[in-house]
Amino acid sequence: MVRAAGLVKKFGGITAVDGISFEVRRGETFGMLGPNGAGKTSTLRMMSGLSPVTAGELEIDGIDATANPRSVRDVIGVVSQHDGLDPDISVRDNLTVYGFYFGLNRETAGRRADEVLEFFDLKTRGGDSVDDLSGGMRRRLSIARAFVSRPRLVILDEPTTGLDPASRNRVWEQLAVLKKSGVTVVMSTHYMEEAAILCDRLIIMDEGRVLGAGSPDELIRARAGAEVAQVRPDDGQRDNVQRQLIEAGHDMSEIGAIFVVRGSNGQRADLSNISGARVSYRAANLEDVFLTLTGRGLRDE
Ligand SMILES: Nc1ncnc2c1ncn2[C@@H]1O[C@H](COP(=O)(O)OP(=O)(O)OP(=O)(O)O)[C@@H](O)[C@H]1O
Ligand SMILES: [Mg+2]
Image (tube, rainbow, N blue to C red; front, side):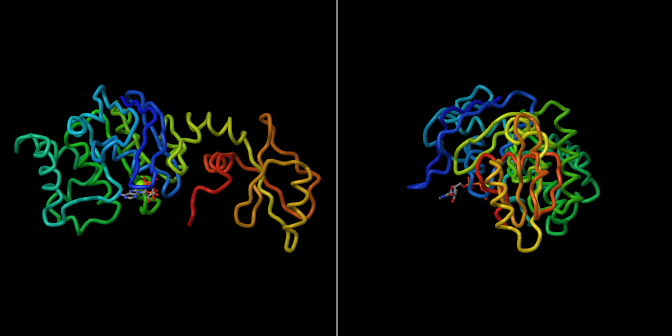
């Protein structure tokens, strides 16, 4: 469905996307995981036909997106990072007006609007003003809107950022159902849990580059092992514990007040000789992968 090769986006002297390559298969949910400024939005906007490609190749559903961004816009649904809903018209009208952009007549646009309102659990809110919706509902509406045109590919830029856990779960459930319907989804996120739950495959991005690619499980197994140790130094023992870990040659990173120690060859790290700290083990996750790849945590807040 998507093929990018050596894709570049520059804004004046800033290189936002620095020659990335990836492919998205039909029917899969594909993720871009990365911290603020990684180049996710810049990449998605090029894929959406909203921002010119600086260099490289980009093909969307057989269309050369570098030459025909308009044609790309006709076949995809886009949910941008900021909602872009019209507060002056009703919830339902936001959907029908969007349908008109795609050339639907009043009747079809109305029917599609009602279908997506139903699917996204907003049926009773169709007559309300957008401003009266909660944050979670507004997000669902902006996702619903992308489906009015029945796109084959939907691009979602951080679909759940800013939502509370309950609303986030709701969006996840709906995206999981949509996935079963066969639509191809490309989404960005900086929540590793979201990527792990929804994405069949993903790329990990940082500073405009792709650092790793694969299914969540593959990435975790290859880059972090099955389990990582969390080493919590006792009071005043940080430097002592760090020295012991370094001397033992462990592969580790420091997050806040904790050392995260990765195993090797699929085995968890043996820390039985470490003194002055409490050691516990947990399953490795995508945040550990990111840490391994960059030496930094995924979240900068
Ligand atoms: N319109 C623009 N003009 C100039 N620089 C830009 C523009 N848009 C993005 N950038 C720069 O490009 C880089 C990548 O930004 P981008 O928005 O693609 O990152 P992101 O991964 O989506 O981050 P976030 O998680 O914060 O949304 C940043 O350094 C950003 O400042
Ligand atoms: Mg962004």
